[in-house]
Image 1: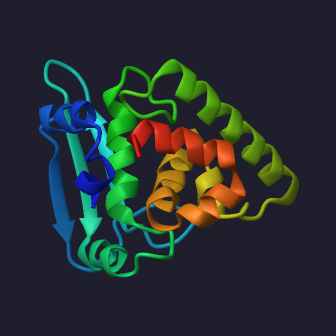
Image 2: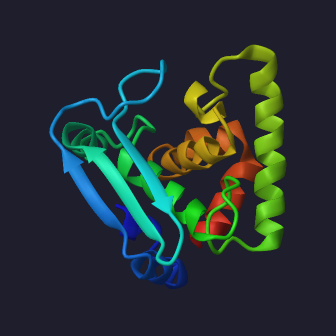
Image 3: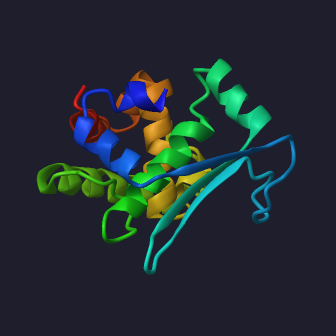
Length: 170
């Protein structure tokens, strides 16, 4: 599904390939986390002489995301977007390869939705509460919804939807 989402962005796919991303699966165990609940995956990177990128998934959550294509909760896309955020020079909730104009539109839409969230402290349209943890989680959750619930995302924020459509070249 990630390749399908990025099929029109060969530059981004190549960058992901160049990262030598290592992917690990574990069987039905909580990968740790915080009070928000069961952690089904995480991505991280280390820097130094050689940078290392890893994504870890709970197998049942990975498959669950594949087979329920309408819930806006898909760990494979979510963690891949974190890796793409890591691949540019600043971890700021913007993916590798986003152009300045699209980034400006995305950030403006994100800021508006955060403003609404800060007033209500509940999900805002297609963006579940977890997406408002920080800018990085917002990118990942918005991208999940772009793939799985595009109509709901477009209704939530047409400018957010259009910025992701431009980034993913669809």
